[in-house]
Length: 112
Image (cartoon, rainbow, N blue to C red; front, side):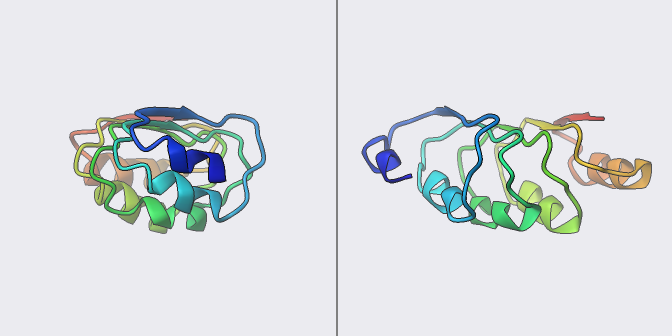
């Protein structure tokens, strides 16, 4: 994803239904102005989201189709401006959905 290097002011990025390599999220996380990120059905795993930890500008995150468990929650809690999270088709149990809702009370969650 070398092409991202010249897009430092990018605020929205949608990569949907495209296979991404594990290191792609590192390149995406380097976009410090990024506010809206969609990575649905990209073949990424939850562990691949770690480079997003602490991103200062992310407000919207669409991760539909990425199986989520506990490590993802740590990433989400580290995003100070996160307002909206789509996590449909992620294999979350009812209990895990409740845990996420309690851990992220100010985030509009779209979980199914």
